[in-house]
Image 1 (tube, rainbow, N blue to C red):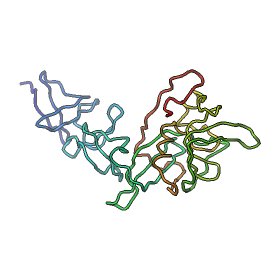
Image 2: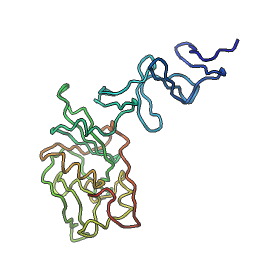
Image 3: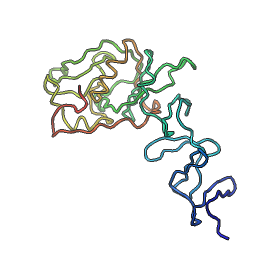
Image 4: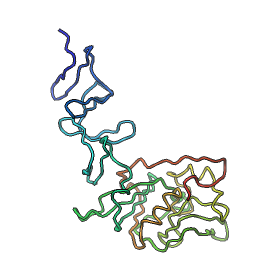
Length: 259
């Protein structure tokens, strides 16, 4: 007799047989208010953490999807959306004044963490951003620094007047190294290169940490002077899939995220 519409256990693994007897695979299944996911390979019910269509999910030991609310994943305090996926931006619900920033030069990701009073640690990532660190010649120096002065825009002049440009939402990290929006060749900030904007995530700068204008603005508005910034390699990126903003102009034009 053919089995169908029922669970099947094989050793420690669970499967679900559909109405025609085939195994459910590569799809979600909800039963009695509990949601499960069956892998695309072999149809086995999944447990633990898994990335599905670009989103991170966690399943308990019984294979049930862990749904909305705060939880700890790999040592980080994360927030799960209603569909069970991990949020990559919790600034609307968690934005404490005390923060810590990392700049991972290998991944090209800047991550802002908030202080968690429950653990006494900066273990709650608020949001992450694609960034361009210094190129191999003008490397952004690894180290621990503190945010200095901050201005809405600034004229940048290279050594020996090698270049002149204007940047939005500037936050000093150390010396002449800053967080700032992708620089413009004109003071109205309307002439940035498409190639520079689309390179966010790869080393391209003269040493500063380039960001999309909207992300530089977020730091300018939400990160206070004195906040610690750590620049280095392989620092850990719990939010490893920042928003990738789309360029909307020609070869040159305004940052589409600037306001």
